[in-house]
Length: 113
Image (cartoon, rainbow, N blue to C red; front, side, top):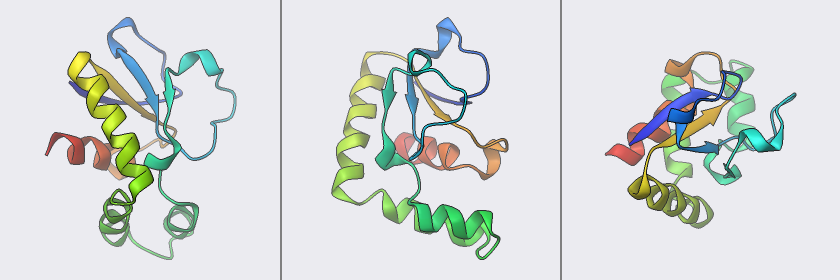
């Protein structure tokens, strides 16, 4: 099972393996709150910056983020998540406040597809 959660939400026993999928470490979060940090599953900085600066829309962002998952380094980290999910629950973590407009939702759908 693959779940999603905001990194700033309280941790739970039910989270299973907690996987941070951000390129930069989130402010105020201790390392022990995360089991794995897979930076390559976060959006590349120029893409994220374009979205945050409203230079591109969510509709434009989505396919670009998913295309980025085809990079070899991202594929290696996707394999790690898939292996962990075979053993038990995995929770993908990101700092975005709106899960409907966050790459963690896109990544979860990608992994479940």
